[in-house]
Each structure stands twice: as structure tokens, then as C-alpha cells.
Amino acid sequence: MSAKSGNFTIGDVTVDMPVKSGTIGPDVIDIGKLYNATGCFTFDPGFLSTAACESKITYIDGDEGVLLHRGYPIEQLADHGDFLETCYLLLHGELPTAAEKAKFDHTVSRHTMVHDQMTRFFQGFRRDAHPMAVMVGAVGALAAFYHDSTDINDPTQRMIASHRMIAKMPTLAAMAYKYNVGQPFVYPKNDLDYASNFLRMCFAVPCEEYKVNPVLARALDRIFTLHADHEQNASTSTVRLAGSTGANPFACIAAGIAALWGPAHGGANEICLRMLMEIGTVDRIPEFIARAKDKNDPFRLMGFGHRVYKNFDPRAKIMHKTCHEVLAELGIKDDPLLDVAMELERIALHDQYFIDRQLYPNVDFYSGITLKAMGFPMTMFTVLFAVARTVGWIAQWTEMIGDPGQKIGRPRQLYTGSPRRDYMPMGKR
Image (cartoon, rainbow, N blue to C red):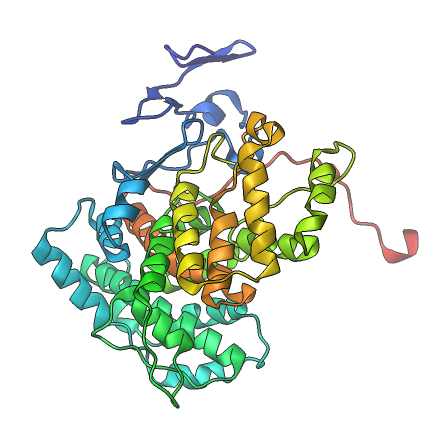
């Protein structure tokens, strides 16, 4: 195969395949004609070498540690903007003016309430149900309450659905948390910013006034920004695949939440914290470091390295700073898990074994520590991830709906089962 000509020869058949170039990143060979011309498919488990779509939203360069949203580095968005500004950027393609930002903030804040019948919907779950199980059901149920924003062919309805999802997801997440801990639901307040509103809905109780800590609110806002979108990952691909069938946006986002729930995806920060619990105390760290270096030991240090980023995860740099700000603000000094985490961080940043293999602490390592310090139980970690990622899912879904070249997703397979055989009556088997 020639990258310049895009020629592919199998047997005596040669196929000319165009080579497409993006704004940045590697070229892509269009293999759309391959099957019709040769009768062959490509085999790419996990789609690691396959571009399933064209997108203008997010770009990742794992080798260089780069994450761009609409061309803007994630570090700049997290340091200088807020989450709703990033939401506007992902949805509309450009950063908002002051007037556009004010209007967008107002729209989102006025859509945070959910239908009152939703409160009774929660009572159908066991009191100890995992909050992610509740979220999958509750978000999917939104389609039963908001019929005026399920027509995917109407741009106005698509935008209304987008605003509703961004606004209502924190409310549903807080309700899932409150139901799990046996406390009454706390309604949103329109005069609070996005992160502060969420903290209040999670931690306020009727018997006393709740005052939002601005340091924690800013930290949570950064966490949301850092997780807003991450290109064609498993959950985003799930949303696009579900959306390719014409399913309503609420169903598509519910599918994304289900995919996010997996420990290899959104549950990574929870798994990382469980590892810290297994280690237990600082004096046991050398034992686990030795196990991590032992090729014959299946143990792996969770929260270090990244499947995509072969260099430092750019989000981890910001989460490192945010994590230490939160710990300093809360004055946490005697938490053994945090002691273990900080010592592991020190070792990973200075031990040549980790440096040579680029096993730096990733965003999941720091976010898990930060969320625990803020008071969130581990079962809520992936829920917060879903709150943040909703805008990315919605932006990707909207882009897909507007793509004239989009087709219903239908991956092929390499069949290795039995060849054709005839049914045998029961008595002859």
C-alpha cells in the first residue's frame, strides 16, 4: 500500500483509495470501496487504527500530551475559563462573547429543575442501588417527560435537548446521591454557578444553611472542564452508534452513561482509590512498588500511565495543582489514603523505572483523591464523570446528526464459528 497513491492490491485486484488529511494529525485512508472491489474487510479489534467519523470538536495527540477542544488547549480552558464556557465552545464551535456567555448561563440555570414526577421515579430503585444504575434509568426516562425535544430532525429541538441535558444532569446526579444516602432531595438555586449549585444539591440538608466553599467549587468546575470531552472514546462512540439509529438524545446519553460505567473507562478513578485502600499505609508502598516492577506479578499500579497519552496526560498537570489546592484548603493531614497517594506520586515522579516507562500519575489518580477529600463516596466518582462528559456526548451527537455522510453504525466481523450444517432431530444427536 502506498500512502501517497492510496493503492491497495490483493490478488490481481488493485483498488485506488483516497487519502484524507485532517487539520492536524495523521492522514486517513478511505477504505469505503475495499469490500465491493475485493470482497475483503479490514480487521481492527478495538478500532485502534480506524477513524469512524469526521469531527471538528476534539483533537488528541497522545505522543505529545496534547488535548485541544475546537483548537484551544485544555490547560488554557481549565485555567482561564469555566465549565459552561467550555460547554458553549464544544456546542457552538467558538468561545462566547460576554453577552453570549451570560445568555447561555441563564438558559442552563433555568433548565436545572426536573419534572416533579421524577422524584417518585427514584423510589422504584432499592435504597442501596449504585448511583450509576440510577443514572442510566433516570436519564433514559427523561424522554418520557420531555416530548417536545426528541425530534432529532428539528435543530431547535436538538438545541433544547442539549441545554436540558447539560442543566439537568447535575440535578439528577445529586438526586441519585441523596437517594443513596437516605437524605431528602435539595432543589437547585438559579443564583448559583454550575459547580456551586451541584455541591449544594449534594451536601446541603434542610436543618442548616449550606455555604459553598469557593475553592471546592472552583476545583469541581475544573474537574468538569477536564472531563468535558475526550474524542472518540468508548462512551462517546457508544453515543454516536446509538444516535446513528435515530434514537432520541436522552436514550443516546443513557447509553453513553452505561458504557462509562465500566471500570476500564469512567470507573478508573474509583479503581485507583480502591488500590490505595489495598495498600493501606505508607510503609507498605515498597512492597507494592516491587510487585509493580515484577514482570511475573499481575499487580498493576492503577492511576499511572494512560492508554492514549504516551507522554504526560495534560489534564493530570491541572488536576495535580487542583488536588493540592483542595487538600490545603481542607487542611487534611491525617488521612492514611491521602498519605499513600502523595508518597506514590513522589515515587512516580522521581523513580527512574516510572520515568523511563512514562508511567506518570494520570487524571484519574488525582481526581479520585480530590473527590474523596471533597466528601464524595467512591460510588459517585463515575457519576460526576458523567455530569462532565454530557456536553461532549451532546456535542458529538449533534455533529453526527448534522453530518450528511453519516450512516447507521454496522461493524463487520471475522467469523470463526461452525460452517453451515443441518439440523439434527433430537433422537439422532
